[in-house]
Amino acid sequence: MTSRKRLLRWASGIMFVLGVGHLSLLALIAGEAITGWVDRGMWAAVPLVLADGGAAPTVESLRNPVTFWAGPGSFAVPLVLLACLTWHLAGRGVAVPAGVGWALAAWCALGGVLLVPSPFFAGVVSGALIVVAARKRERPAPARGQGANLA
Image 1 (tube, one colour):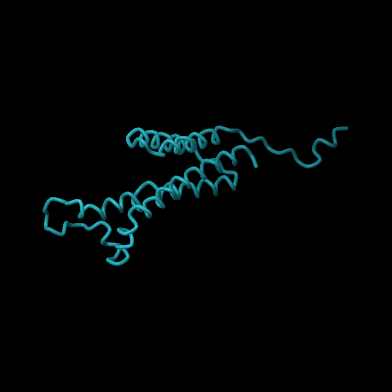
Image 2: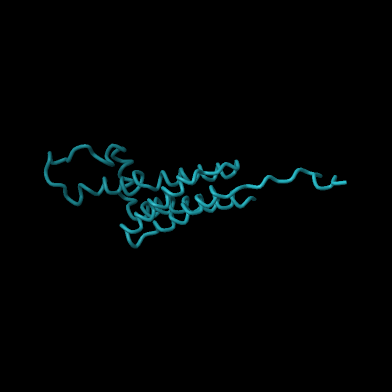
């Protein structure tokens, strides 16, 4: 396994664990609200209007929207998708652009500063690994028998 591939696989593993961990934690904390969506239908997750016709929102009325934006509407789903794409591209030997790594690192650093304590900072490591992998030059492997016929 080349060093670029190894770096990208580590980066994708970190992203995958962060995303799946976030969704798993939400399922443990708000499992009742999520299963309620199945009973009431997915449209119940984030209602378009308040039930009281414009009255001030209550804690109970905000529970579903908060659960939605903390789960399926959060960073976790795109992060898992980015992890899968990075893993796939690493397997094909394609470097992920450094800009993706910089954007991921900046986003995670900002999220970590705004939401302390948080595992957001682990995403900075993942972004840095993508940047380092993009900067690495891969040396072509020598062809078989290339060095044997020097005479």
